Image (cartoon, rainbow, N blue to C red; front, top):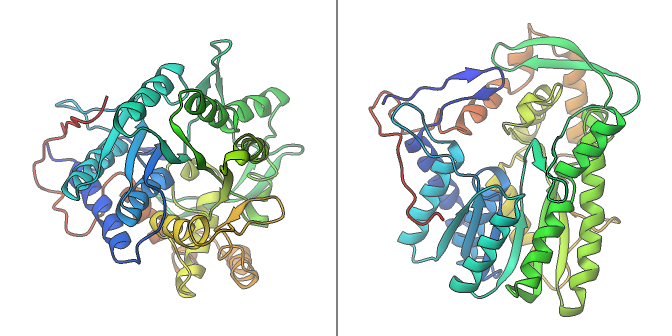
Amino acid sequence: MIIKPRTRGFICTTSHPVGCEAQVQEQIDYVLQQPGIEGPRNVLVIGASTGYGLSARIAAAFGAKANTVGVYRPSQATEKRTASAGWYNSVAFEKAADAAGLKSFSVTGDAFTQETKAKTVELIRQELGQVDLVVYSVASARRTLPDTGETVNSVLKPIGPAYTNKTVNFHTGEVTEVTIEPATEAEVKNTVEVMGGDDWELWMNELAVGGVLTENVTTIAFSYIGSEITKAIYRDGSIGQAKDHLEATALKLNGKFAAGGGRAFVTVSKALVTQSSSAIPVVPLYVSALYKVMKEKGLHEGCIEQIYRLFADRLYYGAQVPVDEQGRIRIDDWELREDVQAEVAELWSKVTSDNIEELTDLAGYRREFFQLFGFETDGVDYDADVNPIVDNPKAI
């Protein structure tokens, strides 16, 4: 099969196994070029196949030489349909970890279910004994609640009045004005149930009851605050309520595990190109302007650079992890620098369809979007015939 990107709105429906493998290797190479991390020995990453979860698994394995377990949804290919990028990423990671002599295991399933949790506990018990780092990086639009069986959906909407601002179709470069209607109370509640801290806490409780956590376990989950431009749609919106709940959960988990030296943190990261963020009005335009400014200042980081800095300069740098007044680890500090935000705001006020390519890094945004799916990667022949079916013999 000759695999080309096929888009439907803000979704790419195909992915490229060779391109995904090349990008995983790029992340590994970056970590191997950095000083080693005196960090975890056995790591569980829940939501391990893309984004920050994948980068955390790579940094732990190739930076700290840790053994890893990754949990992610199965999405194998057929002769007519490619697998997901996450599937190809995970196969590539397993292959590289084996070559490096590192233990790695994959549990495939819905992270929200009790079945997946139980499978993971049993695998850790049999293969690693215990884990000393748990990374929770689940990003999903829906969740089936364990108590009721009801499936609820999250929304990315403002709370209060409707919100109007600029947005861009990043495929065409057309800048328009968009108005987003506010979330209902029910939508806010559902968003918290999907994207808040409930499932993180369930995972930690299940792992603790199963006896597969070290006494001094560290656990982290990811959040975002962002700028004034995105505040109404993000931090002050429905997703912000979920992130508030996530942060409250971290404090709760800290209380639960502190007696044995355990720690729980929410890590606030910078804005990046992701499949979910590309569908949020306003955000692609903001990220395009942010990339322009941060690249010119030599401050730009992708997932792997952010995660390496989190591990090497925060979590495992010294006895005391630097946190803000809410107890959060901040690796969004460069994004929110006053000079960076001032320049982004200036670009925002000027950008139109006519000058967007000049004023922002929309081209970089587009390229990173397609790279999420294994496309536009240097050194890959996209005209070559490839087999989309790639097995992962380590996945259970």
